[in-house]
Image (tube, rainbow, N blue to C red; front, side):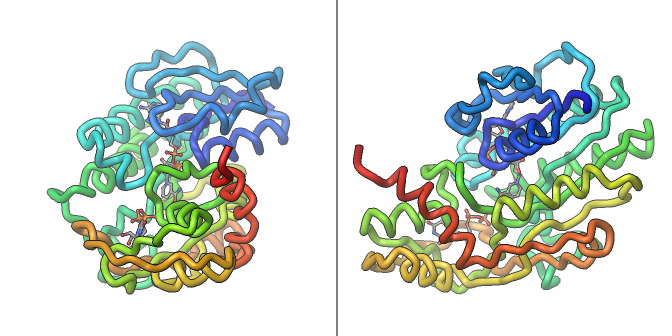
Length: 314
Ligand code: NAD
Ligand code: UDP
């Protein structure tokens, strides 16, 4: 089956990718500096004979083995995390991605890039198709992430054009599920943790901004269809659930699910917070036969036990 390198493999999404690769019979090397990832996400894998964990930074790590495929997920993903060290965030995505692409080129490995709906910025086209070039503020506080991911995409397609590297680029829309870091500030984990603790759910702005929430199992299925497609796939592919909800609607769904009586509290809207976001997944449907299956209410219910376990006083 060959060896798969997963950068960011100790993170929320990356750890699910490691699980699936091992289940499919691959040897897996997880390369992660634990900047935002957590060992508990890969704890059950550490004794697996086909799993190797390497704690290192993608920007500086020297390739030390041959690999057959590289899944490049290393990057902080939540706004509070990626804004804590903005220069570092940009360089992880540019220098780190280039280092991993060079490794893929050396070994003739297929390369997967975890890009993001943030490449569309605060979009003026709705829903967002891959043909839309986006509306990113290149000087604002989200630029380190948005422009880092845009530059990473450019690197991927330049490696394809220049060296023929087989790159697979997905643009991931907001994804949630078990193993999210409950403290990383993303809205689903924040709302579930607050509701379970009976604390106020904090809505930034008036809560009318929209997002489309994809359950992690659906996302990972899309990843594998993208990576396993026998035909090279030219250009990026959106992966996300097209069900679109206001943040207020998400808060209501969380309160209903948990039976919590937490009040809503309104806080200032962060700078450059996108007003709306919803994927057009026509391309994923046509090229990969992929459609997400888990609606929001069901996905929230599925990950409730994970968050309830974390919220329980020890
Ligand atoms: P996460 O923070 O849980 O995982 C990111 C992982 O990358 C962590 O384990 C972290 O320690 C690791 N990492 C960061 N910098 C590194 C470095 N320099 N060297 C090695 N490892 C490093 O976030 P996630 O939600 O699992 O996101 C995974 C990928 O998917 C990211 O690239 C993110 O940009 C992308 N993405 C995620 C979402 C989402 O909703 N979850 C949406 C769009 C894009
Ligand atoms: N948000 C919120 N309360 C929170 C966390 C986030 O209202 O506790 C809002 C945030 O301003 C944004 C949306 O929820 O409009 C999604 O935020 P998240 O950080 O999860 O993802 P992103 O902004 O990267 O899409």
